Image (cartoon, rainbow, N blue to C red; front, side, top):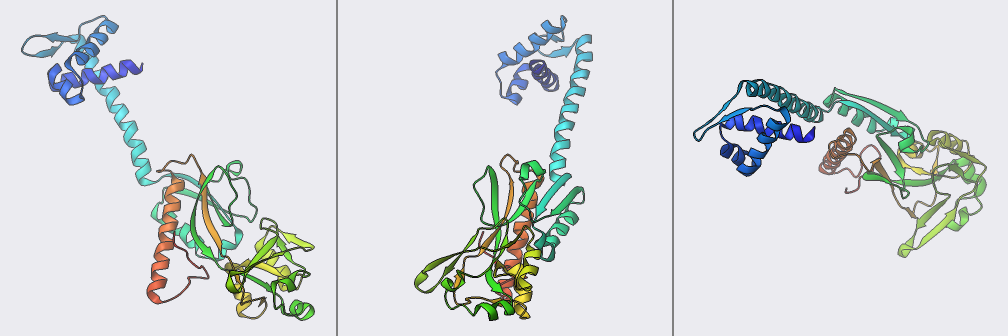
Amino acid sequence: MIDDLRSMAVFATVVAEGSFRKAAARLGLSPSVISHHVSRLEKRLDCALLYRSTRRLSLTDDGRVFHAACARALDAAEEGLNSVANRQTELAGRLRIGAPALLASGPFVSDVLAFTEAHPAVALELCLDDDRKNQIEAGFDVTIRIGWLQDSALRARQLFSVKRHVCAAPELVKRMGTPKHPADLMNWPWVLETMLPRFVDFTGPKDTVYRVPMSGHLSTNHGATAKRFALAGAGAFASIDLLVADALADGRLVELLPDWQLSSAGVYAVWPANASRNSLSMHFVDFVHARVNAMRAKAEKAGKPSIAHLTLDEP
């Protein structure tokens, strides 16, 4: 069938051009190859399709009927190709996004809204959950992850980074004593987030790195709940600016060892490795990344170091 379709396309070109030579030039083939395709069709159909003379070609009665069928088939093929191309241009279909629940209060939701406004034919589902589900099994086209990525078959792009803090409720600081060095935190209770590492690395003078293991009786997969545990004095809490900036600002939490630095946590868009360049997944990632860059440029122009508690890195 594939060979038949190829020969039909060649035959239609011969009719359109009026000669084997012109058809060969248009298709980038030799005249003998063009002649072979037409002869093949005539043998397949057991009839003559063209009257051949030294001056011109003309269709037989069977040739006219067959040429009309070829034209319909080629038009249908072109329509099919155009329909997919237009779909990719117009961006239509379903897109399922997974993201941590804490992003519900940040600018990411605005990014999602802006994407759907720009592409109204896309049906987008946003699932907010702090569990790191298997992306493929959960059926997500794109997931947003905060922290450090593990090796996987997925592809990722860093969108921005967020500042991290180690903090605690004032009551716990009063009970345990204000730490002067990371070693002072060795015996502190910690509120743990299930999906994050069980240690925190502090960088001090002369780039000295001191690792503090975290242990505690309370752990959760939900960032906002971990924050509530910390506010209640259940333990020290290592988290990101997005989650604790408000409590640090109003004194409900106190930053521990503010003179020591913590590495920032990356915020990544993650998608299946086999997603095509023109897929909805990639269009969404590119869209959000462009908005992050625009926010960065606006903040730099205004002389602000951060935007909505997001410390932005270069892509």
